[in-house]
Amino acid sequence: MKGKKNPLYKSFGYAFEGIFTCIRKERNMQIHCVATVVVVLAGIWLGLSRTEWCICLILFGLILGLELVNTAVEAVVDLASEDYHPLAKKAKDTAAGAVLIAAMAAAVIGVIIFGPKLLAVFGLI
Image (cartoon, rainbow, N blue to C red; front, side, top):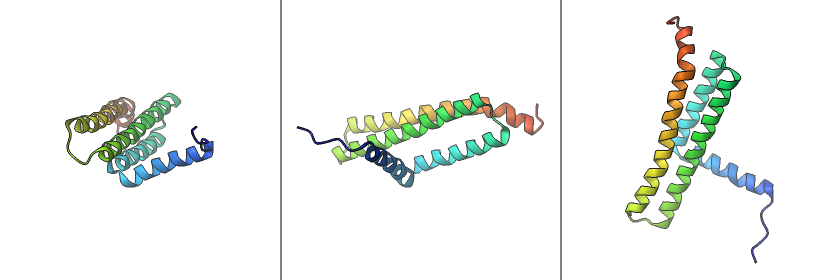
């Protein structure tokens, strides 16, 4: 019989520990966090609408969440084998590719949301 499950507060604690460990140790997560702060500051400055904020929040969650999953995949693959294996490479590259696709989509959406606002601020439209 399996042991008793951890209390819910402990599960949240483990999750936050994972998030903070990833932020402390993973360069790409740090880059995503800095980008998130820059977007938030720019959004405040430019006065994003509620809808625009919701879009940004969804994208923050998507990218940061995928970066956490990517880090987990890399850790599990490294744990399973220290030797090079084509399937290990495939798993790592695919997880990294998922983050890249989300980041590229976020960048395009960022241009759509912020581009006209920035052009207006600088009197270019």
